[in-house]
Length: 632
Image 1 (tube, helix red, strand yellow):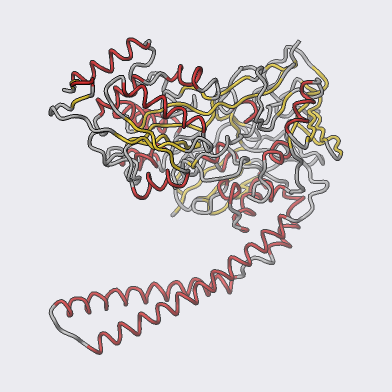
Image 2 (cartoon, rainbow, N blue to C red; image 1 turned 180 degrees about the horizontal axis):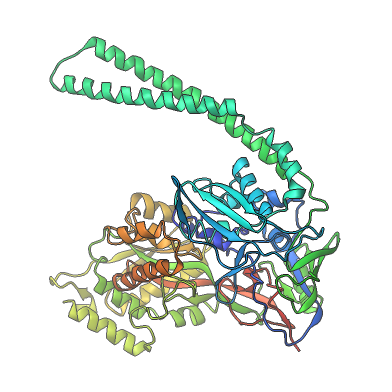
């Protein structure tokens, strides 16, 4: 299953990377990277903010930190602050803000057969060894990732499908050269938010490891073998057409069929040769990647709000960067203690030894604050079901679902209402709303019934709903996950079946495992409705993955042209207009019904934040020590 929401499985994938990938089958909330571009005014100061982490960090350098082998929540919480980025997102409103960059990037322009864009670098930034941060560092990082063909988050930051190379036009100007025009997911939400390492420290290690990369001779053999295979396939297709045409006329040409068999055999042989070459290429690339990931990073210069200060077997301490290059935090130090299990972390919290438990908990204290997350839940209708395809019926069903009651009462704050297809305040149009939004329970039901009446529906004996044709509306099956796999969705399915009966619509809940659910939606399409969950991205390109004409979740090409525009749009305002137009249409058509997002509990005390709730919770932002304020 692939859509624009990210298929990353690790809990440490960044939210902004999700924008570049597809909507992923949901597993865990994805943390983002804190923006410290705009410090929250301090009302008080304290010496230390104290965090608890369950588990210990592993020994990883920066190349492994953003690879699948080193990407864990604990590692990201500790090491993600050490490398600068050109731009970051503010946790308060998710706005795109300059960090190590000086102002905003240039427009992406046509440049020869490709495209290019430039970014100015701040001239006042220094690494901890005292050397200046320059465009050479940014270019080296991007080109190293491309040369080593790193995947996972590195590959999402610097996608080789788009980025050809990076150049330091001068010490304060980085120029990115593209093979094809990038979109916002690739540019603003990918490359421009990528971590940057110091060239002087890593250049030698990268040069040594690069000796293990596939050489030019192997690349040339692969290219020539591919060309040979393409040529053979063209010949084979031509012969296949001639043989088929003659056979249709009842004619057999033995020489022609012999040539066909010969070339067919040659194709198979060349395919085998190419596969062996590709296997060799992959093995060499993996060996080189491994060599760079294993290079020691002791003494690596860093640049950020926080700098390494002290560490021990079960703790790590950072101090505020005395240069305050990105603003001054309200604490002199940020400390992290490692605990073996949840019980010991909770005991330390209750004893006042730590201020914030960052890791996920199964037993959440009652004092926890809750925030919405990117883990969104929808009621999905099979587009091939002609009964459920009626927008009037979908509107009525949307009206009898009280999302506030569902999340606050039935799901006990473990979920937050979802009233739109887009989560981020940067992309959500506040003027758009679901039908019946803001109405009370009685008014909701009255609106739903009136909507059905105006569409020609009526009610028969037993108050079962009748179609405009007079025939009875059939009963439907509602697929939902097993309770042990997702208790929230299972409970929501029970609620939906009850509410639907208020309209005379009969849903019977049928539980299925995770794989069976996705098989029904994306392969067999044997379902009526399903309660599904995805982990969405900050940049809502997933709308086009769902509804842009290439998904079994939606029939028709209504959004195909605007989605084509979005794929190459780098202007934020133009992209917002496209997203708003798509969402406006979806809220009328309702191919899905937005229901809720899984809530993120934040477990902290003696701290305050500039907003009680942010998308993905302050836990998703690793406790955001830059934004925290000591409470009186």
